Length: 114
Length: 113
Image (cartoon, each protein chain N blue to C red):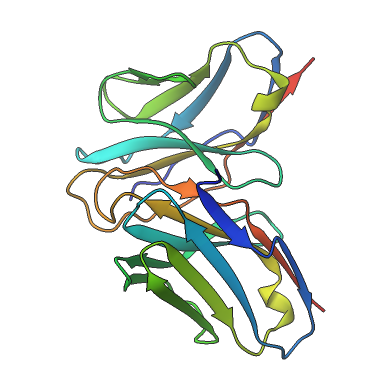
């Protein structure tokens, strides 16, 4: 069974559209994250939720809105997509938000905005 | 979180030990050293972490110098599947604030047949 799964794996869309990426973890973890890896391969954290509560919000445009309907799911909705949003988006989870718990990453969603 | 410095790339022969260095000269007393790797087109994968003592698990060993200003990740018998970018990350561990990973540029390890 996949621990952290994301859908879709690939997403190609046009500028100005609105799209969502879904993430689910079956590890029973309390904390989930979204990371963005750009074309230069830099990985940066975007958001983190702990027990459905937003705890990390790095300087991300407000076109990006995460939503956590329950502990096992963290979705990412992006409005008015721009060319610069093209990247691979990784979801991750950890047992808790504090401490040294390792993070488990999903396979990524490659978003291409044309 | 303290800054880390890693070589951009390294080669290793298959079956030999791969030793990946990391410099973290500004590390604080309560900061841990973490290692993750990212195999091409996959999500990052946790490998190991440590504070002061050397650590070993089924994937690798972590050697931390006595002054804690540098560390080495050792893959004892590298295989082609170990070809990946390896990230050394320093952050506060237990009792720390939020569990936020800050990735640098990492070391691209190429295992050669």
